[in-house]
Image (tube, rainbow, N blue to C red; front, side, top):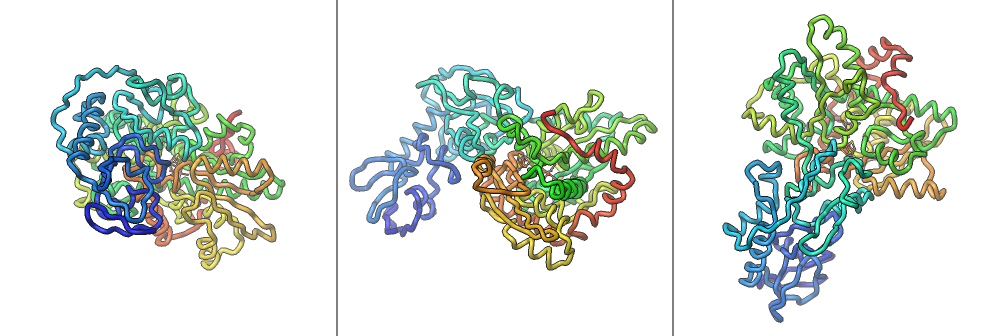
Length: 563
Ligand code: HC1
Ligand code: SF4
């Protein structure tokens, strides 16, 4: 606590962890590459230097503690020269093909080069050329665009507990890469894509499959059927001037139809199937006495994490397929006849906030007769690019709701996209008292919130049910360690790999930190205004489940990982 003098102005500080934060509070946007408020401080890019007015020394403000009476300047001639020099050096060793780079318009290097008016680079281009890595289903790595800010290294280690990427080499050979320069597909990468979400340049980007999508849409022999995930609707608008959290599903449906998609459905429909199946499985486990905890299964990065790191827990994972895969199974079953009668082939595209869903769709378990159940997964941002390509103005479209019969979902389904939502939906189904008051009690029980691990307890028919909700794989790791040490016990654990749940998925529009909360609130608002709040109230889902019968459901809605 105290007062600093910043550019001659007295600025009080109270608890800010570094001078950078105080300067930003004073309304001065000091540039940075490697500072990410959610991650540890790395202090390598040196862009955030400030000058001490007394000594004339320059120092990185991200690594300086604020002190009472400290006097600094943020834009002296020395500092401006220093920042331009860093930018020139970075640009000299960067593949500057901005025109067709996926990150153009969202790249920090490009933004700062423009902001600082760097037009000429005085240094020769001596950079080595590195091989690109196309081996991951989820992401694409181009080391020639890496500026060594280390954000990807830290997010992978600090948020996901994975440590897949690290620095290697020295001096001009320094690089970020997987251990032993392996390809991503040869590592334990779980495809969450958070490295791509924080990458300051175009060095790690989402595996772009837009071309494949257009080819399918323009193929008259293909019936293109889309499902849209819960978290997409409250984030996609950010790229078109809508506020984070604003639900623009009906505009997106309309845009997809204009683009040439035949039918547009809602993943919420299948999330209701998942809730019912998962709740039944959970109640059976309660009767049978385990195995506990039952882990949720809808986040493919989490499933992959267990497979690669802790396979003994695979029997704890719910046998229910994720809503995306349940949707695909139902669709393929229902459309087989349609395909046979009109000679077209149903081509199924899932629009997801997630890069790991690309990996999930490619799993062997979800291939039948040589074709995947989900033919293609597009992320929210890929859809944004496709809409931009068409020139469609979303705000001028007539609204259109998703098609029937798979366009209807409950409030319990839409909250799948926010951390705690899957558990809350299952609880709604399991609690015997179905009154509005119970719904309210669950809502405020602590199952919602920002904390990475939350615990709640409910009474189900006289049994005390302990539930944990986790977001961020590092916290899942922590929780498992505590369970093994006998410090914690739960009947049900929801794990979502991304912070905030799918609203914070790596396929969403950039600027994750600021928007996650609003996106989650947007989903809660959609729940509040939903026609019905419980999965079992979905008339189409209940009718279909009984039509299909238990054997079909067992064979098509469930999966055993690792067998
Ligand atoms: Fe998700 Fe799910 S909520 S996993 O985060 O269970 O991606 O949105 O579609 O499948 O429903 C993602 C979101 C999504 C599934 C559902
Ligand atoms: Fe994908 Fe959601 Fe899991 Fe993130 S939390 S990896 S967006 S399924």
